Length: 81
Length: 371
Image (cartoon, rainbow over all chains, first blue to last red):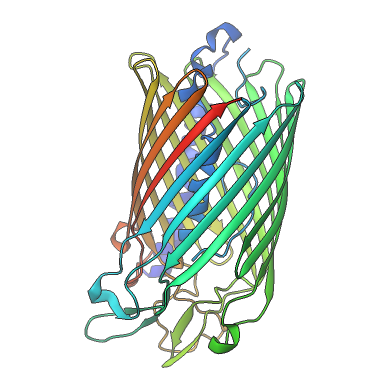
C-alpha cells in the first residue's frame, strides 16, 4: 500500500470514528421529564469544563499541536513556540 | 427545570490560578548544538465574575505569563545518527499579558455573550473579539449553540535584521461555530459541534529555519489556511459510584493536509462531603501536512517547507489528575498533567524522524472565593 493510500485510509477512519459515536448515542434518545433530571444538574455532569482550566488547557495544547478548535469560537492568538 | 448548558447566572466570585509548565530537556543524542534546556512557563490568571442584575453577567479575565528556555531551531541531517536538532543557543525570555472582558445577557431560554480581548508579548500582539449564543427548546431537552470570532495579530520578531527574519507582519483569523446538545436519558447527555476557521496572512514561524538542499533557509508555509474541527462530548452518570464518565472526541482537518484525532476520557468522582477527584487520559494523533519534513534533500517546487516538530506525524498520550475541595464560600483546585509524545504513538500516516517532539509536566492550582 502506498503512503498516499495509507494517508487517505487514515483520514477516513479518523472522520468515521466520531460519526459512528454520535449516531449510536443519538439513536438511543428517550423522553426525559423535568423531575428526572436531578443527576444531570450535578457538578460532575457538566458538559463545559471549568472555564479557567479550559482556557489554560486549550492554550497549551494549541501551542504544541497543529490542531485547534472546540465547540465554541476561538479566542486570541499568541506567539508561543 | 435543569438547564442542559449554563443558562443560569454564573456564581459571583474571584479566582486566582497559578500554572507551572516545564518541558523535558532534549536528549543529548538528538542535539546538534545549542542548549538542551527547553521551555518553562509560569502563568498567573485572575478571573472575576459580577452579575449586576438577573439578566446580565460581566466577566473579566487577566493573565500574566513569563517564559524562558531554548526553542527548536532547525534540523540537520546526519547519515550515521539520523536527523539532529539544532536549538536556539541563547535562552529566550518573554512575557505575555492578556486581558479579556465578556458580557452575557440571559433571556427566556437563550444567552448571548460578547467578548473582547487583547494579548501582548515583546514580539507579538493580538486583538480579538467574539460572539456566542445559545438557545434551549421549550422542553429543555435540546440546546443549540452558535458563535463567531475574529482575531488580528501583529508579529514583530526580535533580532529580525540580525537573523534575516521578517520585520513586521500580520495575520487574521475568522472562526464560526455551531453546536447541538441533547439530554439522552436521566443519566446521560451529548453535545456535538463544528468550528470552521479561516486564517490568512503570515502563517510561517519567523523563528524557525529549515535545511533545504544543503542550505538553511526560513520556514515557509502558505499564507492561507482553512481548518475544520468537529467535537463530540458525552457525559454518563453512574449512580452506584455517584461518579460521571466524560468522553470527548475531536476530528480536525485543514487544507494544508493536516488531520488529527483527539480522544479524551475522564472520571469525576465525588469523595466524602467536600472533595472531588478526577483522573483523566487524553490521546492525540496527527498526520503532517504535505510540506513538512525534518530536512529536504531537494527544493520543493511549490516553495513551501517546514521542519517545525509541531507539524510532524506523531501521537501523544497525556495523563492528568484533578482534585477539587469545595467549601461553602470558597474552593481549591489542584491539577497535574504529564504529556508524552512520540512518533511511535501515531495511529495514522507515516512518521519521519522528529528529534524535537516534546514531553512536559504541568501543575495548576486555583483558589476561588465567592463574593
